[in-house]
Structures are given as C-alpha cells and as structure tokens.
Picture (cartoon, rainbow, N blue to C red):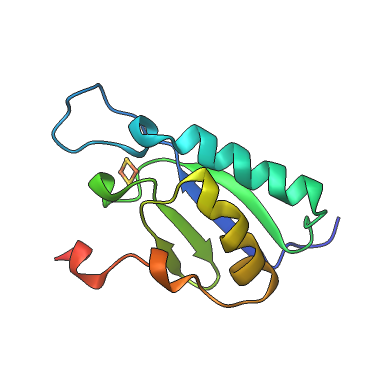
Length: 108
Ligand code: FES
C-alpha cells in the first residue's frame, strides 16, 4: 500500500443530548465518516487519502468538524452531502472548499 497523500480527520465525539457544548456526534458525524469512506472506496482513492475518526477537535458547536492534513485545513458544519465536493476539489485537485472553511473567529 502506498503512503496516502492526505489524512482526513472526522470528529466523532459525542456528548449527551442538551449538553451546552454540543458535539459532532449529535449532528451526524457518523454519516459524514461513512460518506468519506464510501467515496474513497468507490473512487479507489486510497493513495490520495486515508480517513480516521478522531476525538474532540475543539469547536464543538460548529460540527461536524473535519481537518485535512498535511494541509492543516479545517472545515466546519460538514454534512454527508458536502463530502463529494471535498473529495473532488480538495483531495483530488488540492483546492480547499472555501464555503466550508472554519472561520478564524472560531478560535477567539
Ligand atoms: S465534539 Fe467535535 S469538535 Fe468537539
């Protein structure tokens, strides 16, 4: 197996319903991870990227959070329907999907 060019992390953290911080698990992280895996398999992109579920990445109320390394590109509010666009534009063509980028203010 060749070393993948990129590593995609999908936050899979869950908190109980009503928790003030929210969580990616409560807004569909499982479906986002499944869609990434499905896209990689059907398009045979295993040399382009590997997908991993992660624990909390920080901006919990903006989930589902996705980070692409080594680029260091952070995406927020990712849904399964966004995944094909991330795959096509970013993973295959190297261009981040601007409309999904995490705003810098999220860290203040
Ligand atoms: S729960 Fe996903 S970033 Fe914290």
